[in-house]
Image (cartoon, rainbow over all chains, first blue to last red):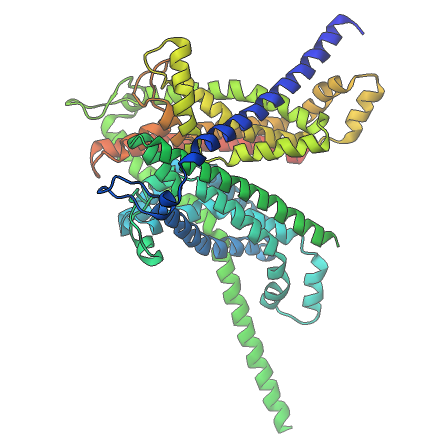
Length: 280
Length: 304
């Protein structure tokens, strides 16, 4: 082997190890730094109260609840829409052109940056019925639609064609086949879509800043949806950038980090579970 | 006789009603299917309608190539060249830093790593992909910005460089994940043939597998470009947000942060706010261009 070749191999191998190492160290550092600074700042008081100017305390309970409300509201709207769109694509659409147009639209949607969603959401929703969690949730519905649609579509593709043919052969109409054969087949897609959407909603801030606002009032779910409120990520931004409360910001960051880990973990587990069940 | 006529009638009406139900349901699903298309049209139309007035008032050339942005000055100036250039430089910098690291890590994960190592690092990469952008911004603000100030002896570390580093880290998981998928799809025979001809494994990976996966890797890079161009919050927290022409150690404003930074302070209907919508329109056009490129690469991959 000549020297050039040896050098090339050594260089490439070294680059691979170094780059993978850099990535791993980066993740370790980020996790360690955020957890190290965040966990000491998490207290029961922080989690269970709302901010009070009188006592100067900061509590993030309203932000936690707002996050839960916005997740629920978004999922409630996006699931039927996404499942319906996926069913149309896999079960009804015969025209290839229509399918490719819809898929292209979904791809376009998933490439649009969240700040643009924020602006359009502001124009579409907030200007019509006020800055509110509902306006934020509807904006997030558009953002998450392609994700849900795609995951459900993938799961529908794995429903064997013979099941459908069997049902048709027994005299079932199209709608009946969809209800009894296709729907049960898309459960894993719906669950995966939910998990991915929740992850995206938790991390979203730019799209919510102008649609859902950044209030920290403690509300019930219906009131909450009608009034402006900050989710955890938006609260993190406000506390870090506008108010300089880095302790609280790190506490929220640590919570978000743990939630991200849990979401990734459950996505993997759900994927494995359904894969195993399908192969049986 | 009597009953059979009755039955026949009953059957027919039932068939007709199920037919109608089927039609209605098909219609509902069609509407649901077209919703994504509707959303894209709605977004495009809204952005164009709200973006055009300010461009008309300022003048397209002045708007796109004006070097000065002073929206709140007595004599306001609305030139967005600094934002466009910052976005371009920032993205290019992030790609230059992120792509090599992501590329080599992807080759390692796909071809060299043992199953266990790969699972661990993939979990880490997925975590990196899932961390909210504000968390990146927070860490950047408190670690990177002071570090840049110390190392380079500049008065303020909130700069284009800080944004580039944060963006490079943020595009890293996208690049790794998409490249790994592309590399995994390279047929084993290609590699076997190369090995049989006497190439070492490393040579095989970089001279056979990588060229075979080049469309997918190109798509990964374009996806990274899209994410870097569109990122707002993390950049907002580390770039300083002053409308300077881009320079590595100066506080800069990206297209995204130009929109979000002034939105809260501008009054509805003012030229300032309309100009912000025009910036969003420019950003949107950039993204559409990037999407088209991405589709080009993905399609080429599929056709092969």
